[in-house]
Image 1 (tube, one colour):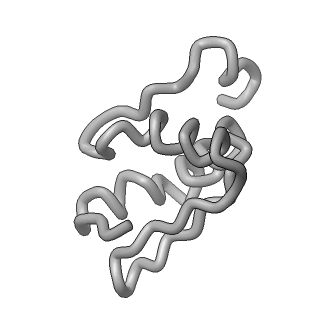
Image 2 (tube, one colour; image 1 turned 30 degrees about the horizontal axis):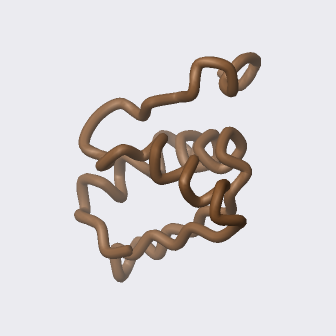
Length: 73
């Protein structure tokens, strides 16, 4: 999916930590092509849906599922 420059910065996070956390919580593989501003989410339908729900439009804090983020901070 095509994303904005601001969304790319948010998704990547400091040192790639946000992207890693989204991937870990959703169990989806997330790849960000910064040059083209394209976000690719791979995995099962459920995994992709979880990742998209966490991203929730990208324009603010990610919405972590309350029971899935324990111990990931």
